Length: 188
Image 1 (tube, one colour):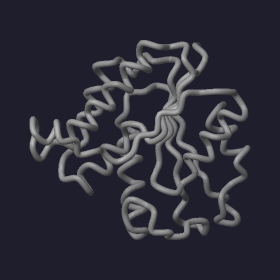
Image 2 (tube, helix red, strand yellow; image 1 turned 120 degrees about the vertical axis):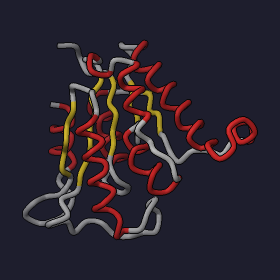
Image 3 (cartoon, one colour; image 1 turned 90 degrees about the vertical axis):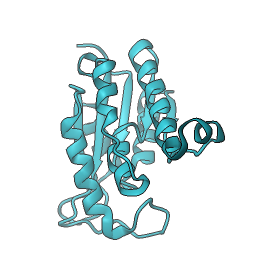
Image 4 (cartoon, helix red, strand yellow; image 1 turned 135 degrees about the horizontal axis):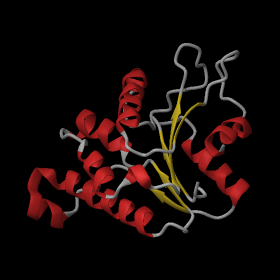
């Protein structure tokens, strides 16, 4: 089995993605971090694609991501909020389907990218006591359960073979788990 050099870190807002990414670097060393956020509405895309400008922006960014991780196998890369978020947030907040990302996975043979690991950080809502609605998340706190379910569905559909589903919630207290333990699961 090849060494993992690329990590795609996914999950709902405020689930600890940035903390996990920082700890990966503390433990393993430098990685190029690509942070994907909401799409920009670029004038050139509006001119050429009208109302689908955001989709075109996202599609181009994820195509570039797959080009990079498929063709630069020895580079150490972390994708913060990679492509699965498009399946969740595009239909909820932008009015289009993000399912095209699965076509990108197939086009770039994600199923045989032995150097890439897809990680979905999840919260255990049955016991969770660590989330505080700070009004910085994409959607309202009441949508977290639904958004996470959509992430899990997209994670299940993904063709990446090396996948980790990691809970960030300590079952006994409902607080965040110790970061070292979360990282152990991400990296094992």
